[in-house]
Image (cartoon, rainbow over all chains, first blue to last red; front, side, top):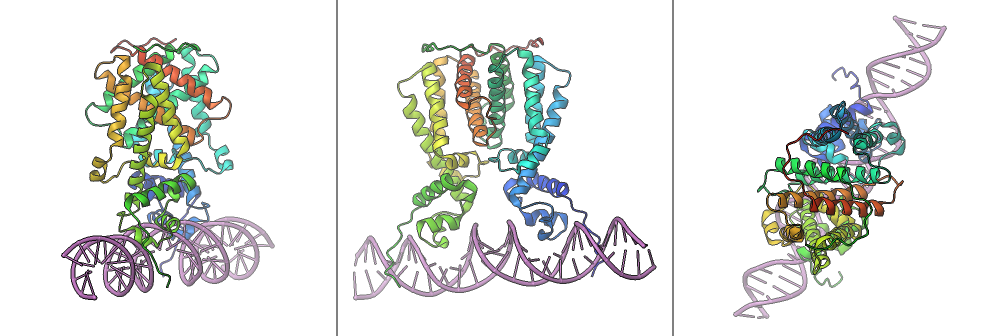
Length: 202
Length: 202
DNA sequence: GGCTTTGTCTAGTATCTCTAGTTTAAGCCT
DNA sequence: AGGCTTAAACTAGAGATACTAGACAAAGCC
């Protein structure tokens, strides 16, 4: 019929299209059919580049991790202390706002092809960045690891709750965000030594 | 053929079955068909009690919110200060461990029937409980609201990352958890006043 | 016992995932 | 250039799912 040129699909192109779709309509409306439609291709064609839907979602998650890591790296370059913390957190949050579908993909209980994971620099580098960003707070192991985990938990939790509409409208979310960063900074500066005392009630 | 007695379905029974299924096989394997199978019923029968799959997931989320709130209320009863904080956090985390599928349901960007939401005591009461639990730290508004949001963010984020396998195995997660609670307690006791000074780098 | 209500089923449509096998385009080799 | 090889895309189709419409039967009410 029409002189069909090849579509020029690659795993990366399929993944990127899936990621765009996720940002547009939400991750769980990302279907093989929808991605194929957006690419102007039959859905069966995708299976030459991507194992299945779960694999595609894993690839979107890795793409997001890579992109987010790059943004964070750019944000904290040349900064230290609270400056770096705030830049880190804002870059993190901004990425989630700019790419809600991709960010959601990073949350799914991980079922990623290990070989693919090993090839992706994002997740590993993200942890390294966090460690080096916190280096200014002069924490020793294992406190440093604990602080990294606390920081990641708080940022991820905040953004996740925010995205889910978990914060009522009474107080502006921006203000709370700023105060939370203040709080984290304070906490990191005064990371408690191991204390076995029972804190007394007020 | 066989003298069919009625199955005795209700919206609550369908929801509960869906919740059990979510804990068993993961939330996104909860399908109308699977729930119907587990109930020994045709899938079309479910639509008399539940609007559709999205509605079912919303109901599971509300069920989880209610259950979680009850556990937390029991845990913090009669406690104050750090005792209450730890009890709160552990009850929260334990619920997520006991009911991973239901907990996942609480994370989905909320698309719940408003009327149903208004009828469910869980979410509202959860916020109230958190406020009253933090009362011991003597924070005034708007700091109190910010602290509530920070606490929820950190707990949710930690549990979410933990469930997603986000913590490498080097350091025991239990230890990190305990130290994070120490940190939160410290932070709540020394909630920073509004400071506009730039924190100096190390 | 008849009537209404409503819970469950049968039947059917549309969509989706994924596989097998076929066609055809692109690159290579002489 | 023409033929061979490889791989990309397609056609066709099986199996599963979400959901609807309409039939039927059980429970409760009089």
